[in-house]
Length: 130
Figure 1 (spheres, one colour):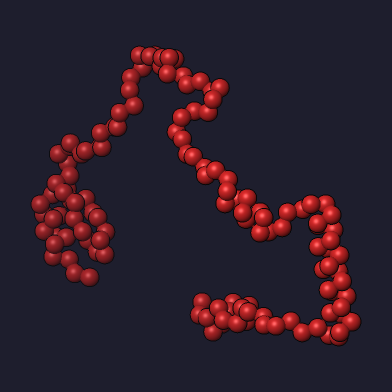
Figure 2 (cartoon, one colour):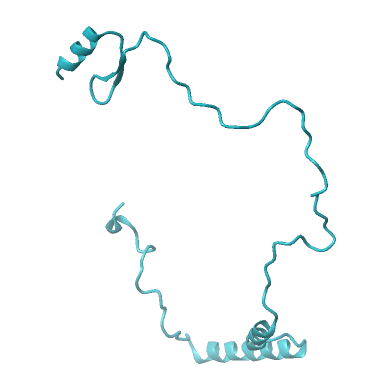
């Protein structure tokens, strides 16, 4: 589908909204009061600010990746596999035609594979036109 058929919601430009304009000075004052109350409430209950969270995250130890099993989980190397004597899981040989009825495979029209049973039939297929 072409871009000119899409609506305005699929835009790659104009994502920034710009400066917010308050409807009135009263709305701005109410917002500032609520924001101040929210900051006071967070400081009263000692909720960390974003900056302190970032510093704490940067000071923490980095993650270490290991392929060893976690402590307390044992490996089962000592358990032997059961040999039922039924065979193995090796790949089966691909089927191959071993008969003498089919001489070969010819292409009739548009990559259509056709079995050829005789030399006369091979000559007929080679002289066929569309």
